[in-house]
Image (cartoon, rainbow, N blue to C red; front, side, top):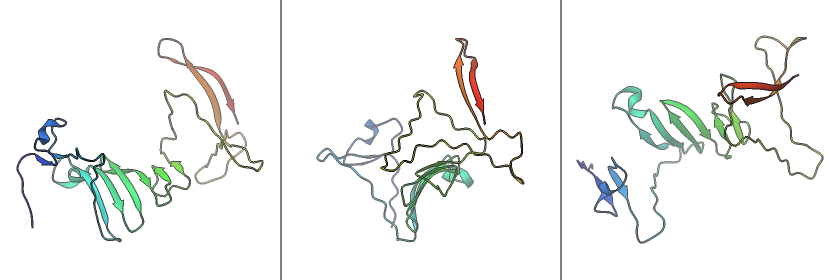
Length: 173
């Protein structure tokens, strides 16, 4: 069975067009403080929400929120490419579908940028003597590191008032 509705749809509201401009489906629940959408699928299947720019090819699924019920993993897709995963242990992977830690970022350009809140805080709350660790690791494809290789650099930068970055200090390892 199929219902084809040409126009705006309101569930719990007679005026779905009163919501954000372009809203075609509005869910409203004035009698309770909770409103949910449930998407049910068989345990070995997938369910999701797709955002389309068109009806053919990748345009039909250019953006997605996808849930795989078989492995209990959620995938977020932008520009028709998987961008972020949350696995069944709650580990978040950006650029990797198999995060190896609670927050795993894999990038091909080698950069992770933290702006505006200029602090990275490492706090290890254990009873043993283990300390927080920042690990700089170099993997040379096709070989091992050699004498003279920098394994990592820690540098401090500032701005000179003209939007130009100025190196303050740098330590190479």
